[in-house]
Amino acid sequence: FLWMYQPCINRVACFSQIHWNLKLPASLETIGDGAFGGCTSLASIEFPADSSLEYIGEDAFEGCTSLASIKLPASLKSYWLGACDFDGCTNLASFSSADAADSTKPFLYKGQDTPVPTLVEHLVVDSSVTFIEEKAFAGLKNLKTVELPASLQSIGDSAFYGCTSLASNKLPASLQSIGYFAFCGCTSLASIELPVSLNFIGDGAFYGCTSLVSIELPASLKSIGYSAFYGCTSLASNKLPASLQSIGYFAFYGCTTLASIELPASLNSIGESAFHGCTSLASIELPASLKSIGYLAFQRCTSLASIEFPSSLKSIGNGAFYGCTSLASIKFPASLKSIGDYAFSECTSLSSIQFPADSSLEHIGSKAFDGCTSLVSIKFPASLASIWLEACAFDGCKFPADSSLEYIGEDAF
Image (cartoon, rainbow, N blue to C red):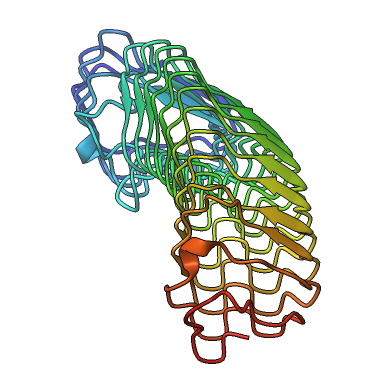
């Protein structure tokens, strides 16, 4: 071991042909700019538990090509950690700090100012940490594993954004929230275990996690944020918790492998484009509590052959089932008051529509059934008699207009 006693290290002479280990004293407060730069044989660095180190200068360990791991002391004032301290440390695969993700030291693993070396494959977050900062580990493309402490309560926005090699992550039982885009673009993430304590998943939290096959959401969860699982093209199944009340915009957009999903009885709204482009989704049972289906919610779910609407449903948004080319028949509930523009447009297999005798329907939007070329008959409910049937609502359909209607909009058929 090489011992250093002085409180400040400015520059040391390096012996590139000799592998050596460095043990630093507790009294050391400062490591200057370029202090160990180019020490190609430096194999390890050890900081004592009672270290006084506060400052590491720029390029302090630049080019230490033999350095494989380092754990920084809790005493370090991370906002002084230099921009390229570990630049060129081509073998550095393990990097951790006693306060690595402490919210009081927000720059240690953040952005261009103080990056973790991009070749790091394994990270250990100290047992005292409760919060991982925004963008803490973003862009670490070689990061494969992360050890998170039992104390952790929150993962910040974009914390693991773009960690394309991260294959799995076990989240601690203490975790309560996952921030916006926290795991966005983690394209190797195949599985993740969410704890029962979790009550918040932010917008885009798992956006573009193309290897994620399945995920079970905890019973404590009440809402799924916008684009939470957008583009998770390998996601084949998803069990939603009984506590869930809303599914946000684009939540499962483009999940092309999703074949089935169980919606809980507590659900009252499905957001805009929530299941847009889920081309493998063959059937879905909507819960009795559901009141509204959002704009483009199931657009181009081309395998969707049947759907049963609950008696609580009041509105179907614009384009909600646009291009669902396998949908063959529809039975609307008496509670339904409005069918939006393009709601069932281009449903080319749709041959039958049924309205109950006590229907509350008041409005059929523009081009609602445009291009439904298999639709041959329909009887409108009495409630629709004096309401505008918007222009081109049934454009391209083969059947004649219902003579019971008092007003039919321009080009309705």
